[in-house]
Image (cartoon, rainbow, N blue to C red; front, side, top):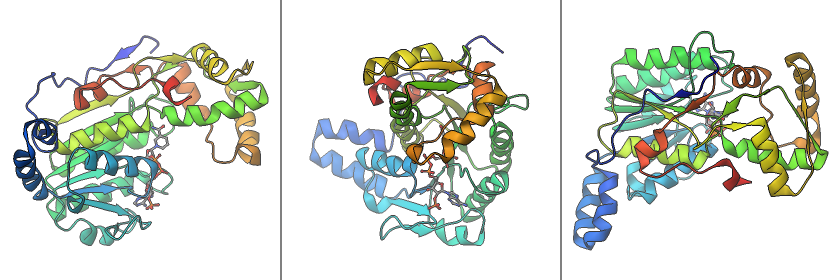
Length: 320
Ligand SMILES: NC(=O)c1ccc[n+]([C@@H]2O[C@H](COP(=O)([O-])OP(=O)(O)OC[C@H]3O[C@@H](n4cnc5c(N)ncnc54)[C@H](OP(=O)(O)O)[C@@H]3O)[C@@H](O)[C@H]2O)c1
C-alpha cells in the first residue's frame, strides 16, 4: 500500500446534532441561567476515564472540564492516584474494575501499552464496562489495524476492536495517529547530534498532537451521534522524512543530516540510542513502526479531529 489512504471511516457531517457538553458552549452565549440548566443535565452523566494518570488521560480530563462537564461528573481511573477522586482500576486485575466503574455511564478506555497481555487487558476493560452497566465506550485504537501491517501493535488493536464490538455496548473507536509530541521531544536530540538515523524512507505519516487526541476523545464522550463509528484521528498533513528534517532545521537552527538506513542497522541504532542517558525521557520509533510508515501502512490522512471537535488539527510544527 503506497498511496495515501484517506479516511473512509470518519464522516460525521458538520452541523450534526450535538448535545451534552457541546451545548455548554452554546449556553455560554445565551446566558448564565441556561448554562446552569445544561450543567445540571451533564451532572447526571458520569464519565469515566482510564489511563487517567497518563499524559493523554490528563489532557482528556482537562478537555472534559473545558467543555463544561462538572468535575464531580468525571471519574479518573488508573492504578496511580491522580487526586482524591481517582478510583483504582487495573485491567490486569479485572475484579478491581467492578468498583472502579460503579455508576459510570460513559467510559473512555485508553489503550494500555506495556501490559503483558494488551489484548486481554483491553478485553477485561470492555467486559467490565458491559457488566457494570456502562452505556457507551470510547476506545483509543491506532491506525490501520490489519493483519499485514508490520506496525508492532497493529495485531493487538485488530483483536481489541473486534472484542469491543463483541461486548455489545455502543462504542466509538478513535484510531489515533502517532503522537507529534514524541517527534517534537526527539528534535532536540537530533539537533544536538547533528544527525537523524531513520528507516522511514520516503513514507509519510500524519502525526497528531496528544491535545487533539484528547479533544477528540472528549467530544466522542460528550456529544451524541458517534456510537458505531470509527474515526481516524490524525494531524492535518502527511509528514515525510524530508519534511521533518526541514522543520527541525528551521525550528532549531541546527544543520542536521539524515542518515537513511535499513531495518537491521536501524535496530542497532535504536538500541544504542535508547540506553544513552542523554536521550532519557524520549522514545524512538520501533523498527516495525518505521517500516510500516516506509511501506505506506500508516499513510492515513483522516478527518477525525475536525469531525469530532469542529476545529482543524494542529500541525507538528506547532510543537517544535
Ligand atoms: N499514538 C502514539 O504515538 C502512541 C505512542 C505510545 C503509546 N500510545 C498508546 O496511547 C496510550 C496513552 O498514551 P499516553 O501518552 O497517555 O501514555 P502514558 O502517559 O504512558 O499513559 C499510559 C496510561 O495507561 C495506564 N495503564 C497502563 N497499564 C494499565 C493497566 N494494566 N490497567 C489500567 N491502566 C493501565 C497507565 O496508568 P497507571 O500505570 O497509573 O495505571 C497510564 O495512565 C498508551 O498507553 C499507548 O497504548 C500511543
